[in-house]
Length: 197
Image (tube, rainbow, N blue to C red; front, side):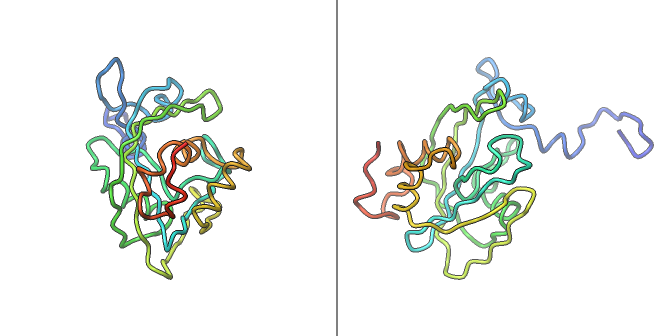
């Protein structure tokens, strides 16, 4: 609608922002984000792990998130907009979610997973995963609409806590750590930690 309340037939910025690249009947096309999750459609995503000296920055998802609210996840994850470059998307979302600027995420792997995220929704993602090394004293300003808490945690402590308290963590973080940690983290973690489950 325009300012006078007339429907112009054009998508609003909010509607554009919720259209994500998803496969429907084998064809990649823009699909509304919630609809993709309710139908379990495979869709594109990005995830990033920000690290500093072997520690991982994790975030606790805001309670207003429409799935997995209050659970701990990797530093940042999202869906790229239609035709958005995955690396550009990662840089954009680090700023939007955490106020983090100036990092250069390094592509590590592409991972496909499917997981129930509650509320009748399925995450079926084809994810480009990145790692970014942070300097000491990195400025972080979490967006409270996205993030309720952040924490730096040692990699081994994170994997141990995910094993001991899996209900505190998002399904995708558990999948990354249990099945893809060598591909994602490589030489960023101790050699004893690189065996994939």
